[in-house]
Length: 411
Ligand SMILES: Nc1ncnc2c1ncn2[C@@H]1O[C@H](COP(=O)(O)OP(=O)(O)OP(=O)(O)O)[C@@H](O)[C@H]1O
Image (cartoon, rainbow, N blue to C red; front, side, top):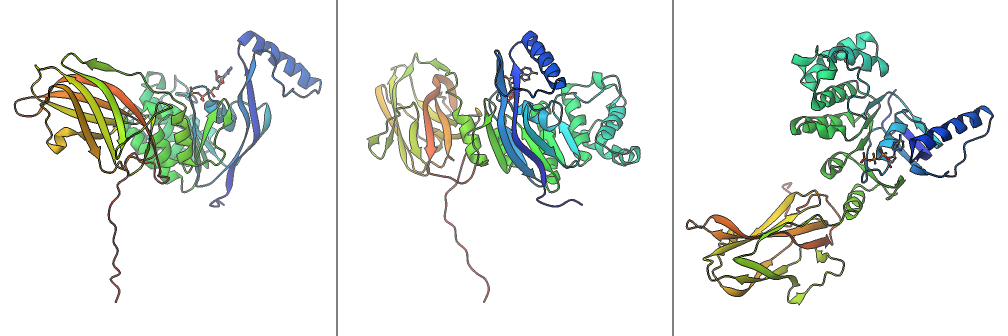
């Protein structure tokens, strides 16, 4: 009998070490094997060339919960997922899993390439513990979800990466496991299928526990109610708070490469951000700004006499390289015609970007005769970095602030 809130995954003090070279690793493996036969337990110390891929991790996951695992490449996410799936054994600690486990861990893993999609559905279903009759009943749903009707009798070795993911997810999801483990593989699917998977995950979550590895933070924010940031095999944020995990993940990355071009007819001499009339310092390379406050951007330009009129556009780019907002002189019908050394002040009344780090890019375009944007005079993908604080709720990059009223209509 399934119970809401029942613990389905229990991980206690789990560690896994690997060796940096294959030959030494094989030698240690042999030594450990003989040691086990002779009854000695494996040492928890690292031997030369060994390192901890996962170190002393503990957590519990209940039915109805989705744990997002995030962290930079090599942080230990897949190793942890493989241990949860029983593909590799921990060197220390214990893992207790309850119920049926569905997994989508490595692209094509679990498929027999010479068998058709249909035959693989039966194979995988059997591995998950379903009878032939149960799989017969699910077959149409799986094929329909995967949208692979035409290709279901083709050997899986001829499937594209996206088709393999579709089949793998459809099997794992339609079989309604108690615990579902998903690695980054979903990223291979096209946008439409990814959306469908996320919706299906939301449905499944009412009755299962999900562990989800992804580098796509909006996906993590959308479906996880718990997130751990792994760093060198250990959990960085023990609270599991999704917002904190995502922010800490972004903070691990330095500013991206900067792209600049143009500058012959209009060049930028300096850029400053002012708070009312005080210039803000950026000692660590980020301007510390507060949510919903007013700020002035001050751009000092050198404009050639050969330039007619120009527009200025600032864009705000988040750490996923997504442009989340524009601040465009065109929206205020502000066309500039000043030449020589020009100081342009532009004020934002309330900066409603959600907490986090952004870069500000600037583009200065010529204005064509019909007052639309023409050629670029100057472009800098990162004229400044900003860090927004002062808001703790909400993960969306833009947060509107407005007037709210309520009237009780009851007499
Ligand atoms: N079988 C193995 N033998 C030796 N080292 C391994 C093995 N599997 C993983 N590693 C190492 O363990 C560390 C963690 O790898 P893991 O694949 O868990 O990282 P990850 O967080 O999933 O990374 P990514 O985001 O790139 O998928 C890495 O340094 C990796 O090289």
